[in-house]
Length: 315
Image (cartoon, rainbow, N blue to C red; front, side, top):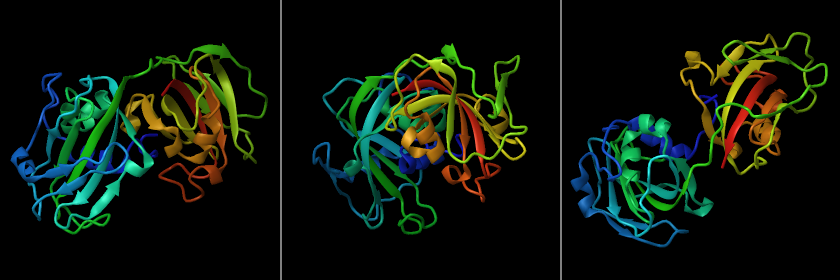
């Protein structure tokens, strides 16, 4: 469901992933700069603490012709390692006007896991954060494109983010672990094929009048909160016809592998249905369309939806 979910720091990660590139095989743990880093020599940063965006002063226009990243100030905290979770806040500005495009400081730090997914999708940011110290400020600049989100056409975008804290990632299960639960009659049925993948049948199932969140396996791990970031495997089908529209278990949807996302940034049916469940659980969600994507849908995900979700980790 990665193409249907907002995953972590939407503005920054979309920008960074789009720029991608860099040497993903760069040695660790040294923080790695990339691009025309001399451009940052004229950037002056006024640190305003951890709860307010720094002041940025630079000659305008600020322009780069390639994605560029550098740790421009060094913190005095622990050195950040691959596989950890780093919390950061950032401010993004238009390189031509200096106008603020996005500021996450008021909403608080954003967690990003330094995993293989980030390394493959945005090796530039992965390589500069891994090996940096907590408290460091990192500057990232992207070449100008067409006008979007308040930026003038052709303006380079400048992002400065501060690495505020780091912690080890919690253990993630390989599969659900817990006690099997027999669901009541009238719900979609779930069978596991010889590859261990859940298959959902919706034959004869009536449209739900309210959200149904039924444990198929009751995990014994931590209780999930709406503020958590989850690691899951899942399969999703439409209730009308049972068409599979997304799955993390196979690569036919272009993203084989577990998904990690804030529970607050998904459809309401997931947020309401998974909060209160436990890590290790396999959960059957039957979601009315008003808690999903409605009648218009998103791709093939239209109307009432059914998911099987394996909760493998929460942080």
